[in-house]
Length: 75
Image (cartoon, rainbow, N blue to C red; front, side):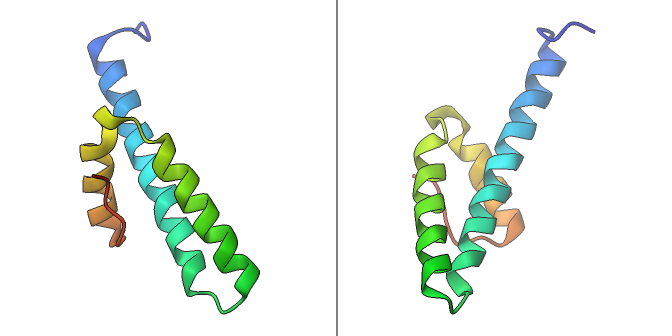
């Protein structure tokens, strides 16, 4: 199967959305740590990830975030 087939492209899009949502959720988890430096690191990581999510992928990332119970949503 070639990487350019529709199925491979759909799978790659699905994997990318899931990965971004998982990274955002992990960054959120750092906010619940009592250590100030870790909270700051979590905020920086979350901000960077939110800027990296392509506009066309945001609805898919939102579905994953909802499934992971994350509070963050893409607008």
